[in-house]
Image 1 (cartoon, one colour):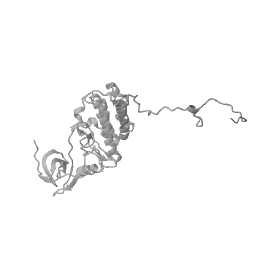
Image 2 (cartoon, rainbow, N blue to C red; image 1 turned 60 degrees about the vertical axis):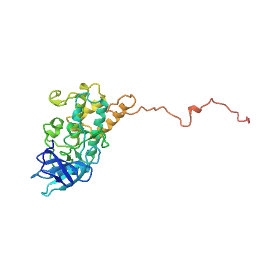
Image 3 (tube, rainbow, N blue to C red; image 1 turned 30 degrees about the vertical axis):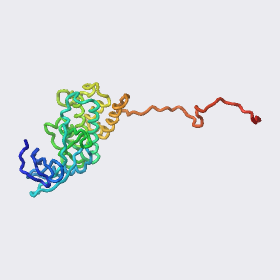
Image 4 (tube, rainbow, N blue to C red; image 1 turned 30 degrees about the horizontal axis):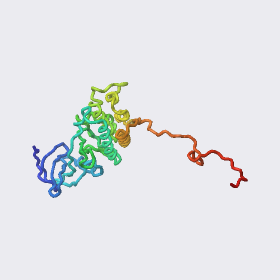
Length: 313
């Protein structure tokens, strides 16, 4: 049943229902009066600073990737509250795929590869998602030209932002990087850690740091290595997941590196059976250093013949 809303129309959108309400904004679903378009409309809540709504709209406008929702338009209400309308994406949350064995290993690799591509696109533009977790990722079955979408960027921050990162909620605390929890700062490696937690759950069915499967080494809480809990997965994949979950952010790969290596691994597993490479050191082909005389071609060589210079025949 649709939830009641005080709005009937915003801009050129007829409001149909209230989706959510928070301390900073109101989220609505509406339909364009002219175009065959449905949208999510976010309106700044009364009596608060407009920064969160404006920030999300500007960041979405800066991202041009099919794995990110599009901003349609924005405006100001009569009471000076800003609003913006963004694409409404239909899909299934990947939270439904977290049970072990729910999806094939190759599909897990493809999913992580595509997520890493979206994150790398954002990171190159100086944007950190800052709150990545399974319920914020939708599987779209390529209806939009891409197999998944991250629709909610409400907690995203710019690299040079003076705004502190959002405090992790109960739902987010297991996906939040250690340096964010301890207040050391936020950068793109925090998104890589969150992606690593998602990868660990997809492969093992459990969280790496929930107090049940974690272990303590030298006084530091560590996750049980991915390979131990998932021995049938490619070693390249389990090694990468462990690197993404490193407590020190500088030990984690970048989202671009994750995307590059998983793209390679997906191609290997999809093609003829070949040995899986290990990420460190990187694979290089064997080279043949046998000396080669460019003036001689063994295919054209014949037995030596002594010719008499006086022989005119």
